[in-house]
Length: 523
Image (tube, rainbow, N blue to C red; front, top):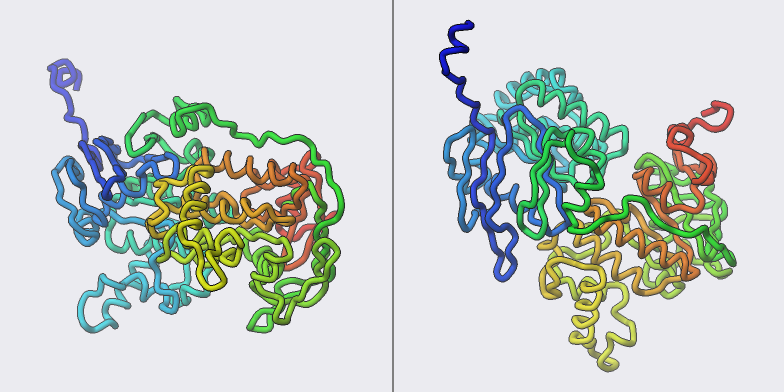
């Protein structure tokens, strides 16, 4: 052995799992990727971060065959590889889990797993094989999920596991995850990290696209930073810091903590008494909610997703019906009749940034300027006369909002579906906050949003509070709740478990309340 070492021979370096050389991609005048080169080591977790619109998802979509690069080369395991479509990517051993899952909701887990990968016209053999393989993969990677469950009956975290299982079933050696924790609870995110580490230990290569610096620092080996379509740096995670990464992403120093003065609450804006909601299946989702918010304060609602926060926002926003009493500025609101809709709520001074921007916040096939007007299309500044809307005025207003909120690309005529998730969120936030409401309902304000935009959105929410407005904030991000809120109410199973002062509480205390453990240990 000693002679071999001294002979001057060197073991050849293992080829990279992925090597991209000089990748460029433009969409008309927008240069999404410009001369990008990146190397991803086998058996590693490689993070890719950048602001919304930096080109991260475009780059990965090229790797997965959704887009074709205008120029550049892709090497998989050291071999030049053409990837004209997703089937070619799958054959090359690449799997991708998108931010918005590609699952058929009324199919079972097993049916989704084999969809597009059937062994023949007869489904029974494919299903039988898939069941065996699924059982093995589930045990090997802690991806436990009922193969016979309908997708629509699964939590978001379990749906994500199905997406990962789909990729592994197709024998993916390289797994790309786009903002994988954007819709997960903290506990689900921790479980996902264990899964990813398990994949890495088995020799799989993971590429993680995320804007969350905590996740980058916790889970990745190496991180690449993109800004405005270009690769600005690739560093070993252990040799960097959140502050350095944030500056590389944005091109300037970024405040990672919310800066705000103590609240100066005034009159009561919102009063909720004994609010109850029963869903279409007869299940009581809200069980006697009581709360109030004063002008000039932010009330944060903490809780694991699915404990009534969504129903609370939807009743207050006029999307759903309920029983009980809601008063805004002393006026009692209609909860069941013709004046219980979103239009009536807006007339009463309530603006609403919904939790799901694509389902409730935008019409994806419509343009940005059309989406900016939705819900406010009767506003005087949008009217040309009694019969016609002033489209030029709406487009000009959209341009101004895009400039203020740094929406990229700043093209009002672009369809909402062609913006990144974070820029879609900025369009919704701009539309609602710029209306100067008395009460802002905001659900998951920074879900899927990059670090620079998070800082900006947080500042806008605090500025609204400082202007004497009331804010109801719902977020599954405890850091966001604790840093933005002036008071924190914790929800569990449709009830408010307790209220805390963010200055004197901690994540452990809030976590116990979120799990249904009240003072004294009673559930």
